[in-house]
Length: 284
Image 1 (cartoon, rainbow, N blue to C red):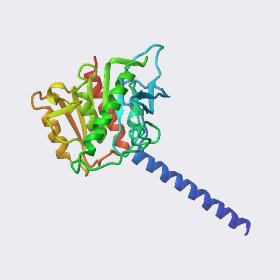
Image 2 (cartoon, rainbow, N blue to C red):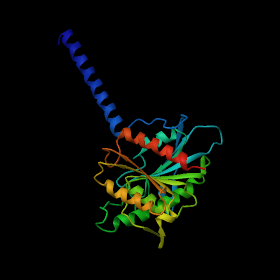
Image 3 (cartoon, rainbow, N blue to C red):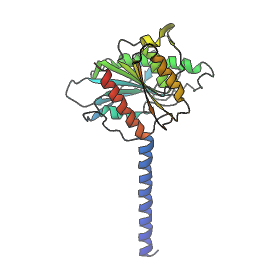
Image 4 (tube, helix red, strand yellow):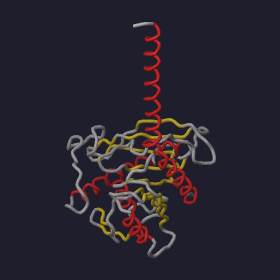
């Protein structure tokens, strides 16, 4: 190979590498997104692995803690992921919140991953479609037990402002949050539901007790995409209307045109901004 041909080959290789890198960056930006501050003040943050134990189950989780003055306490969001997913599902949104001075705790529900362990082993739950059988509803109630334990643990963290604790759930995690919230009206300021996979039901049954969601659920922010083929827009509209049946200010719904089930990278950051604004209106 001549010197000229070698130079051409090297240049071609470099061009290919650069092209692949550019494509990778574009893909990350579209599907994952780049977290950024969505509030009035930018923070750096630390990440800390913290496990939660209950009933022989060990839940893997991570806390995103804004860096501020020593002893600072922050409004805190507990994140509940959807089916066939894990604690990283909405990390871009959570990182954007942490960069804005809101602490976050995200964890793996028992049964979906190998990181959270218990008596049934790992990854023991197999997803089913809503309405096909009662496995979905049973799993939601199992996840409520996990979330209850997480709430109690998070309330003990020294960086948490326990007067301003929020729940964020996506898809099946939204169903879990909505169900769990009816028994936490005293310690949860508000909840955020992203395309919640929840069948409309005026009552929620938890541990044998039935609760009217209008009476017991904290205020709600509901985020939904118009192109969602798993949780149709109409389902979320009906849910929000039900929340607002007795109090028109109970649920605020924000609709993103063209967004599917699981928002793309850009809208994960946009959603973080909406969540941040909502928290500012709800915190004490």
